Image (cartoon, rainbow, N blue to C red):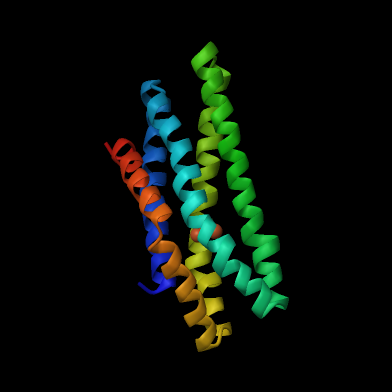
Length: 182
Ligand SMILES: [Fe+2]
Ligand SMILES: [Fe+2]
């Protein structure tokens, strides 16, 4: 599959999960219920799929080649934009992970409020981030790359997608999705 299409389809999977997170946050407010299993699974999903599968291909292949080949304007968009947002997203998840542990241990209202704050910050950030990539960053790379560069990137994607490691990660993603979309 065309690598841009592939990344956009991964965004669609990520967005499905973000919608579920939002629903679970609403149920904290409305029903005073914190679904610990859901939020812990969500933390794992962001690390094992969003980071290790999706961001891995952006950071390790597409964005890396954009910076090296397009240079100038790509350095700004990628290094000072997209990569900073990936780091901020990881920061929200690390905080959320701590909030969950705090909530399990002490059940404080503050821990509950922080779960909401960090989970929704992540949802808002990632929605706008993937929209920016779909609407601006990916099309920018398409305009700037020569055809042989696109072919070279496509080969790198195909190698990654057809690897045994990726097969394992996809199975794991399906298991996590089952819990998150249950
Ligand atoms: Fe990204
Ligand atoms: Fe992305």
